[in-house]
Length: 93
Image (cartoon, rainbow, N blue to C red; front, top):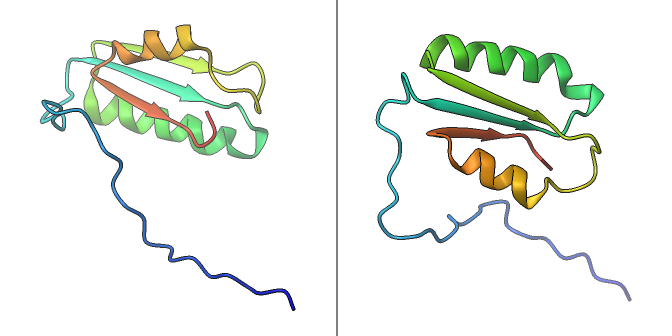
């Protein structure tokens, strides 16, 4: 007889490198956005970017919209975004 397995929805924090700390104040830094471009989220993502830009007042921004919604972002793209002070990555990006 098949069983139904229930998993707890409570997650655990992923491990991280020592020496990393939250950004105290991202104002004036570089903000990067990585979005998978899915049509169902375009209006939300546009408003999210506008709000972050208004709230954080970044000196520079980078926006990457993946050309293929379902393919992972390239290593070069991830490296480029890693240079930002704050990076926002959409689900499945």
